[in-house]
Amino acid sequence: MTKQMIPAEEAFAEWRTEPAYQATYDALEEEFTLARAFIEARSRAHLTQEQVAERMGTTQAVIARLESGRVRPSTRTLERFAAATGSRLRITFEQ
Image (cartoon, rainbow, N blue to C red; front, side):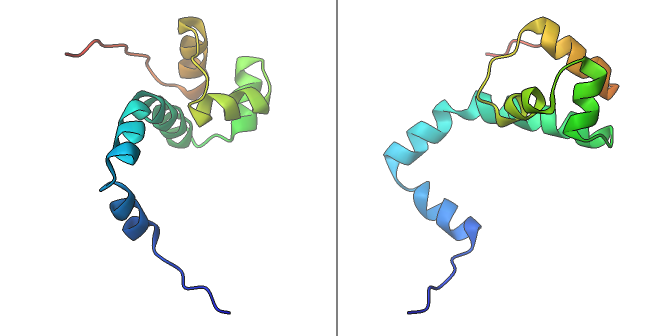
């Protein structure tokens, strides 16, 4: 039996039509945004997770957890990550 591959974009579009999926996705928006910010900062700096970890005095596993979006880092951790990637940390409140 041959399985047909469905492009991720098509699957995602189909899932988003389901209210329960959309609600769950929306609830995770903050985690996705933070994870994306970590990954983009590291990518702009042309660094690996291991290199960022070394600059922060931590382990690659810690950086992987930060980039997963599943942990809520302290302000101090955000500052250290910014310094390690040559970024400037800006925190804002939006309505």
